[in-house]
Length: 287
DNA sequence: GCCCAGGGAATCG
DNA sequence: CGATTCCATGGG
Image (cartoon, rainbow, N blue to C red; front, side):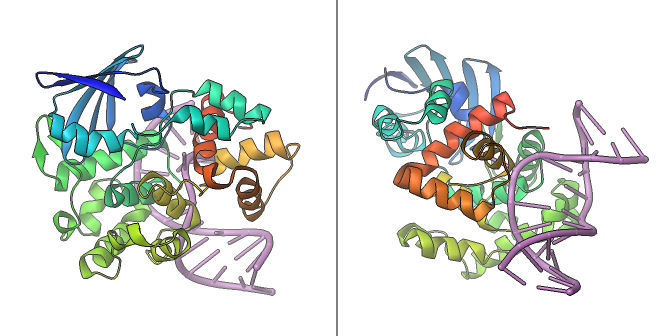
């Protein structure tokens, strides 16, 4: 990966898979705004970053070389060879179509805490509402940064009660968020220690948090802990799997997990993102 | 007004 | 175990 710094701008030239629109709008993260289809602003790791894409030329600003090396390189998964990922997943018509459709998707490496709360909010919710709610929480509790607000730390959310959360429109998920804050602050849940656990243990640990079930745990494992073998199964994934792989017949969640594990193994998480983006964009199997 | 949304908990049998 | 119901909120 070759890049050069021009003042506070990092200019990256890559022929490798990278489409900023697809990467941000494929549903893995929530804190971004689109200026137009090739220019976005994201908030992550306590910073606000603009990304502008013109074909293979991508501009990141304002940033420093240190931040680019230490934060954004990892965040945008820039060290991964996505052609190799696609090669691993080749040989299946449906997934190849989905990979072609979202060929510039990259799996972001997000912060566990923000990812956890965001996906707790995601349950029985719609993506635009999730984004608004996460933004509400940031504005109320987070640190002000240039032109926006960082997602708050657990400490900053310590005194956030049910009434406050109701104002922030978290709905019935308020008590789950309060439980997550309490568990992390008390040390019952150690989000840092989870990094070193095997995936099965890590998942069991996340499931101890109220409001975190298998799907949300898998999202956090995939999007914040880099566990690419998990296959978060939501309504869209269920639909697309049933539609293309089970003759449109109903399949139990457990059987979908087994299917994905056997078919895609250590790369199931990548397959999930390609399929989710394709299914949701094209409304595959939707009523 | 009714239905449903990147699910999960509670409560049945 | 499996199936059903409820959960806040807002957009279609």
